[in-house]
Length: 315
Ligand code: GLU
Image (cartoon, rainbow, N blue to C red; front, side, top):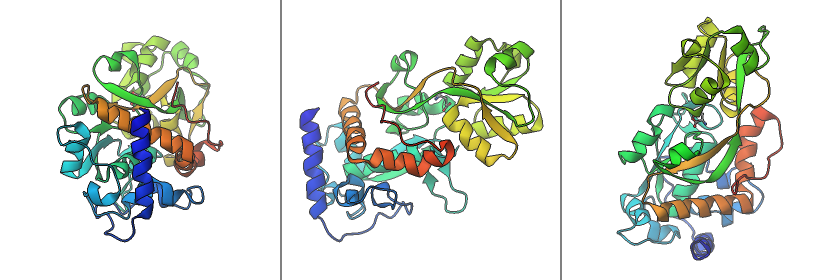
């Protein structure tokens, strides 16, 4: 771990000396390391800043370390792109901006940071809750960065990075609703909407929502539309997703306490230990140099109104 971190730091120092070069072609979105939200002086030292100045898909010219051709990292460098499965409809984490076509949010920017540290381009594929693990197992993506809870059950099938964000499950209801908590919804025996293949679905069963009252959708956008039309009395999932839905739909609000902990991690297919270690090193570097907090301020603070917490990496 330490030696890889040293390697990464060396790459960063080298990158700081790189000047000129082509701008990456596929992503017009602001590079987190160079955005105004970044701490002063961080751009020159950040892997993201380095990639912005490096020829696309050319790790050798980017200042990123080159990895052996037979390693997972070397294979990603050879193809010149890091494919990330992200949400396309979750504001603040993974959201395809309909105007620009760019995928925005905390998860999307984590993909950009990791790609930049490898000297490759980020590529985004939509990964909804139910297809995250299949996409990894079928090698359709290198990483899943899709508001995904790391838990024991999923760890049987895939590996995870360190925790990059701590969410918790809550409820979203119409502002004129009397329901204040998940217990109120269970006691009233009313339908609750959620995402198929999510931990939220399982948590609702555990909280006492019956099969008849569990209304599942592929995406949380569809779940929110069902709440608006009255097909269910609440949407329940990670609060970090609900805040975005409340912002997108007038007359909806997030209520009650968190009734679960949802530690979000980056999913990686088993057998790619070098990629897990690399991703963890990038997350650690981001926590240390302020890029994690800058991403929180940029994407999440506008919805929570709260100051950036300590990055939860080691939980
Ligand atoms: N974090 C939870 C999960 O991984 C719920 C959010 C989601 O479905 O993306 O299942």
